Length: 334
Image (spheres, rainbow, N blue to C red):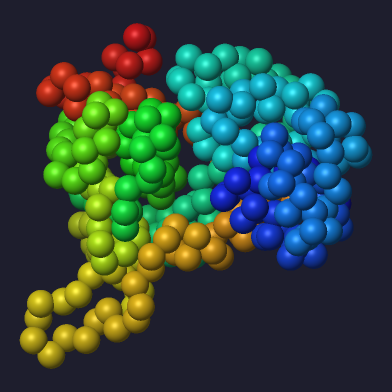
């Protein structure tokens, strides 16, 4: 098949490399406002370069991958759907929830699949955890813990445009909690602090946060995030039930060191970047998209799924700013 890529920044170039190695993909068509980025992709992956999204959609593509700036996501998703071309779009659907809801309304009823990029759904550990929960191996859950700790904060310009740590970072934890447990979040309480980069505080954001989520069956989920984790990129999940407990991310590249005498675990070089931690997941995610394009599977992460994680992020943002519990029903009505 022939896949188009819109946006060739860090993640777009990474997707181009991944797609070029998939057996199902015969050719790539790329476009980016920065001509040098498109030229580099053409030289590296043998891609065809076009000068606009419209030209890309007219180039006979079977599916498109949207890796452009967030502001461009709604228009590019809708352009793909209007052209009848399956769409993969990196999260989020849109910069604001109102724009995301507008996208959902616009594509409702369209027979064109849309997959949103929440890559943890394709990680082997998270997939095994979901299977264990759904098979009843842990019994009834009572506690879930999720962690995403970045080794260093992103640049000031990125932070200023990110929408805040809950919308940019924590949202991955929110999505995976829903996906693994099969439950919905009903209420949140969030806190945050700034002990690091001044520009994060100046942007009105927190660099370290904690959130307590109450799920619809009474399970308590604890989410911990930070922009500062000098030892590496730390992504984990714990699931505790009345029968058993299970953890994702406990491998030799876990960026922690044990204080226990004689304990050598973890013994490997710590994960230092999300592309290192989730290389296999990204490949599986885009392989799944080729199956969506081929019509052999439905979208494994829909616009609706992405918006649900977004509503949790909205509730946590409001909770942080107002120092109080917030229900999901409240933010949906706002």
